[in-house]
Image (cartoon, rainbow, N blue to C red; front, side):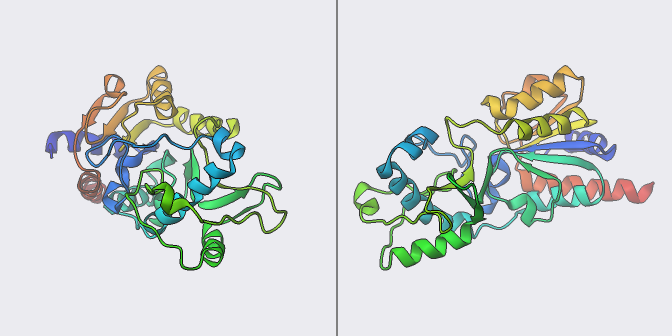
Length: 279
């Protein structure tokens, strides 16, 4: 770890008004694989698109079988030191808002409150007909009841599903909305689906009102997250990035730190504790 860089990071954060943009790299220490970081693995299958999901019963069966297995790991994941450090910074009044690209709910589980889930959350399910949202735990109970004796395992993907063979998927039974019989979908944004405009506007407002943008564990290789860095840069807002590996926003950052998130953020909160105590 580079003490001078962490010291500079502490100086930026200590002024408050920090907007946090977090990505998959923040959750790898909780056992959730990354997309492109050190724990990332090449995808062997194309991600599910919204169009395929709604247009094919076979695609839905494949998705829910894989997701049912993956949820065992995602649903049991616990916040790591990085999540806890972010929640502590919020508790101290230093964070103006958290925009997360993650769908694992670990920021909230760590105690953070001002969280915007850009891509939704896997802990909820939405009916595509009546739009009722229900807890994922309820769906999991219904799926287990509909599939007694069914069991499978496979490598877990960052999206929260597992790699399964066609033979493993065969015979897996789906359940529909208990209220209206409509199709159930995880309350996340699929490829080919747009993030609701009000949610995007809310994220931009958090960034625009910040004194500093702190990017944590995001490679910023896709527009979904990079647009907020571009906005901050256009407004002259200082940008600090902590990530393992280079990112698409490094050129706009005033500070970059290639280091593990948990230890770095723990060090940051310790430095801020000393700084605040001395004031």
